[in-house]
Image 1 (tube, one colour):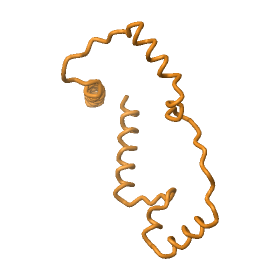
Image 2 (spheres, one colour; image 1 turned 45 degrees about the vertical axis):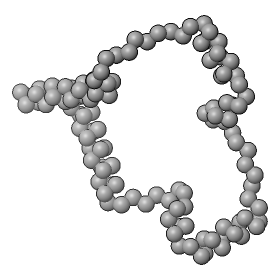
Image 3 (cartoon, helix red, strand yellow; image 1 turned 180 degrees about the vertical axis):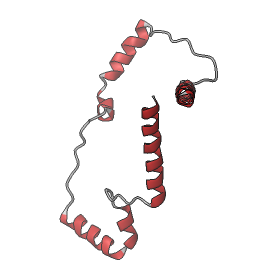
Amino acid sequence: MQHFQTRRILAVAGLLGCTWLAQGCCGPKEQVTSLRPMERSALAAAALAPEFESLRAGAEIERAPLSEVERTQLAQAAQNSAELEALRAGDLNLDNHELKIIGITAAVVVLIIIIA
């Protein structure tokens, strides 16, 4: 029973230490001040500027579809170059090292959940 209690205390202390490190343990904390009215109005005006509309999250970008000439050029490039196959998006090729890292990470998360 004593070992379980010690492990639990160490796990909580470790999580608190990680939180402390993530929040920036070193250096003085900056004093957060609110915006002055002039800064607030400038920020509101910049938020409505049309040139920033394309930078917003979720903004849709119009793209022209590929022409037949471009499609044939891509097909020829794929036949001529074997390296293009490795650059294809969407292919998920995990090697043993990556699978080991994923497994260890999942085991640590499960262990922390069980201990806490």
